[in-house]
Structure formats: structure tokens, C-alpha cells
Image 1: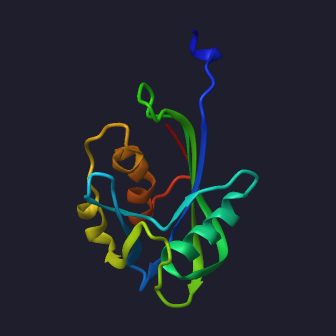
Image 2 (image 1 turned 30 degrees about the horizontal axis):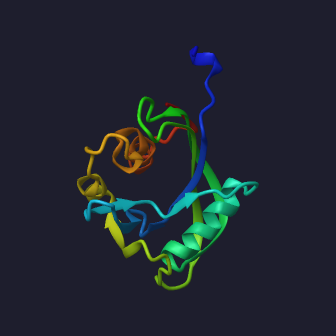
Length: 159
């Protein structure tokens, strides 16, 4: 089969950079299948027919309890992802900033905690590595966040 004739599943997700005091980023703590804790941005998969912005609002509410408004598009990470693994897909991951209100009160059963993390500590919480087909542990996922924290986010990140 040629590269051009393949059909990959499409994975669309939206995440939000929620910033407090100009130097703290809100991260969610989720339990992985192997029992380890994964730190990630609030947000997640977009449903069929759902816009990235609508997915971001819905997912942030479930994962954090916060309401978000005035979303501002920051970047899109797009391309073939996890090639050669059982989870290979064509990925479109959008990132936004937003105003937020409410109290931290996650209702997603996979979320075991929510915490404000100083920018300089965010990367120390990220775990890369096995299994290689795990998108959350792929360094490409974190490249836009690293750039955002350093104040140099690009609008487009090809995979």
C-alpha cells in the first residue's frame, strides 16, 4: 500500500492554557493504564461535528469544574502521529487561552487532581517514554506548551 492511499483515523482534540498570576498554568492529573500519573492540559477529544472551541469549553468544565469564555486560538499541532503503532492517526490538536471562573471541582472520573503549577516547574512534571504509542508521553505534544510558557508560541506545528 502506498503512503498516499492509506486512510488514518482522525483524532481531534482541544486544550486550554489557563494561566493564573501570569506565571502559573493549570494542569490536570490523570491516572494512566499503567498506574502512573500523567499531567496534562485541561481539554480533550472533540466529538463528531463539534468545533474545537466547543470541545475545549466542554472538556475543561468536566476536567476542572471551571467555566471558560472568550477563547483565543493559540496554535494547532497537525499531522500523522504515532506512525507504525496501533494508535497511529492523523492528529489535529488545538490550543487556546481563555478567561475562567468557578471553583476547581473535576467530575471526570479519570482526573485524580487539578493543580496550579509555576511555569518553571511544568516541564519537570512531564514524563516521556514507554509505551511509545502513548500520545501523552510523546515529546511533540509538549512542544507548543514549552513555546507558550516561554512567550514564543507559533500558530502552527506540523508533526
